[in-house]
Image (tube, rainbow, N blue to C red):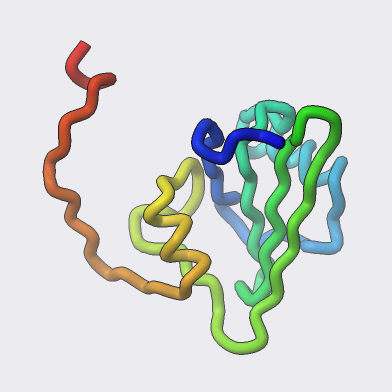
Length: 115
């Protein structure tokens, strides 16, 4: 199983026809996001009505496809995350239905920015 902590999460920018399956979604990852679908990163697709979500990722020996349908409410990506890579906080907000209008992060030490 792909290590969750090492995986990045990408939100597809537009509405997606969720009738698409493994190969077509993987092609969208390559063509539209410019990413490698075999990387182990997670790729999140939302339906036009924002009530359905598919997640595609590669798990060492094959694709995994998760599907979630909300009975009430919609998935609402937070401001500043219309698509592209999202962090785990935005991912959690998306899954839990948190709609944050303004998010202001406090400065934190980051080894990557100190080099």
